[in-house]
Image 1 (cartoon, rainbow, N blue to C red):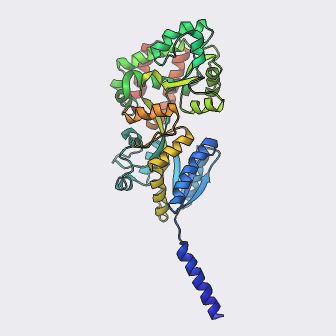
Image 2 (image 1 turned 30 degrees about the vertical axis):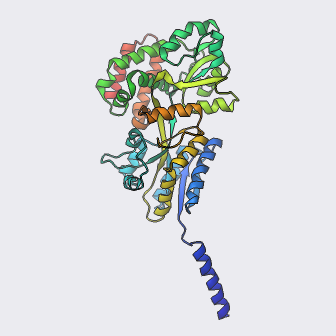
Image 3 (image 1 turned 90 degrees about the horizontal axis):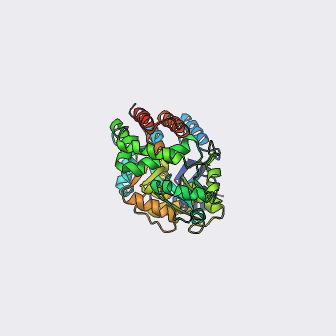
Length: 406
């Protein structure tokens, strides 16, 4: 019996040597469960497990609110998860300043993970003393012009990709029975259009001064007044059915060649492809108004752990690997956060955005730099301006400057 036990013990020890009993693991909370999103998250799973760390998936199909509830529940129970997916911005900074999530600046610098990430994509996750509380895996572009090639062909004109070009093209488009600008007149959709106009008229530096720095002088500049004048002209190019129309129903007008242009995020390109529409034949894209790329930064924050930090570190190394970021974005329709990552395999529109960001023309979207109350006030004001022709661009510009500077 003793011999048998000894042999069994030796066999178990041999097995333990071959497969460590204390293997690292990382628990990841996210809500990337739809088709393309699920394929993107699998890229991260494969990368983490290739490093020898076990990925424990804590997906919440109910979305971000369910993910935050799970994250908070685990935190309150003294058992934090290893990583939390998020749209990077004020939330990451708030969690970091509460001491809930880890400052990854030192680890990222030691492993040369962030040298090619644009400053704006890191600044939106930095604390007051320069701490870095989240890391981006991808950037989602929000200011594309999606245009119908057959609609412009029916009007006998070339596609318009500037604001003045679209305004000038409107008579020919209307003559052909085509809506010049497909618009869903909801506050958030109007704000996407307005920030695209601001970015193209004022440029990245002043855009950042307005939205990130809350600079009242920049918000009261002639560029902002010009943006409101363009918005008033654009508001006259929509159709009567625009009020409160969903963004995807609005996109259908472009897909069906009933409208010429919609300004919307990169997700619209994936929607067009899913409809069976073909890039270069049915539709095209351009950064709206010829401006830079306005992007939302998606990534992860990393709760402070008492154990399994090795698994968390493997996750960070995987997340910031340029090859992984490219593969993730190919699946999700985004662009890599690292500007030294390859663009091979990205869509034609994604390459346009990636090149703009790499050239220094990237800007964070307003969700990354404004608190919810400020965004809500601006959205309400923009919706009122858009639907109320009696509100002058001059009055709207003054109100906007007061909201930014307040």
